Length: 159
Image (tube, rainbow, N blue to C red; front, side, top):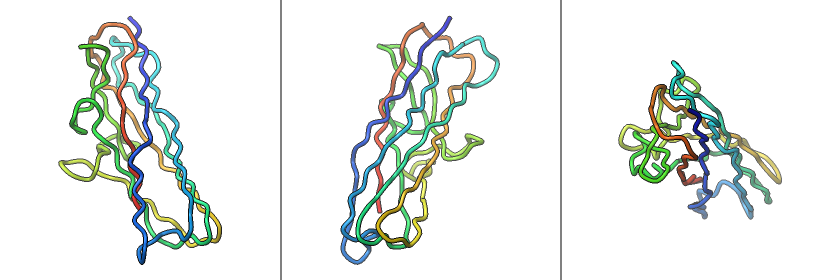
């Protein structure tokens, strides 16, 4: 049995607090993602299905000040980041997104047992780009019907 899996990472909820704490003067920022695409899932495989995606944050402007960027992820359709689910109709496939390559720290909003990613931005003129990896995992041996399972996760960037 083969199941096609793809997570559509939706870009939304960008928050740009300004005045004194501004990280970038007169900046325009864009965020792009590489989807966490699991491909064909084999429920008979004895090991978890691990993949890696990426979030890239690029800002251009007058001056990029030294500071930090917080990156948080919504829980998706399951409603809880600690138990994310890919869904196809009423069928569900458990998975999660992590901040670390060992896949032990669940990526959420920093509350309820989840963690957010804080990335350091160096002082620079005209622009900066930060890239943050996203580690995904589907636990082994989940018996589900074949088909395309999806979830939508909102990325929030705060600086």
